[in-house]
Image (cartoon, rainbow, N blue to C red; front, side, top):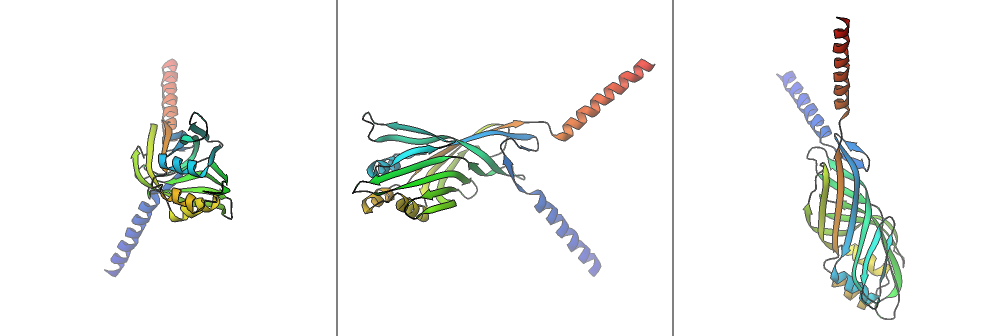
Length: 253
């Protein structure tokens, strides 16, 4: 009886281990295939909220894009104030996929923005902040980034920057073009400190930034195509070989 129980426990443990192994979270780079699906391309963009644009105008922040991303900026007629600020064409380098559910759990983009300020004797003493290579954690609704900041901030890789309020659109790895929108970016406490220090914000500048409760919206587009699996190729070749063999036999008769 004891031997049977032991064998049952071992068998159950082996079954659980196999199940855990099959429920993997795998990384798919652009150009890679997962099963019968190929990740062809992907792009992300970030549109800053109106309140964030207002805070940038208050501190005289200048925004430029960091390649391969490109800037999408509109200014007033005089060219002295931003009307809207966005970043587009941030290439998606890779994604993580849950092979059990097919859900995309993480996405990684390239490029970003560089923000600079000068000492205006009012809202800032001057500085710079580069935010690039976003890592979007769709499961936990978090956004991480590589940051390079002035005024002692330095380089911070995979830095926890924003929380995501809501996610809409497609979030599964499937054939076609999937569009996803991440809305209501809320800056973390550590993110606020990094922004404030890097840009040299004074109490007035910090007050303007503190009033920003929504930093903007991230949008992404991922294109996936269906490709035959290796087994399908093998079956097709076997079929062709069979047809050839039948034709040969008929010629012999």
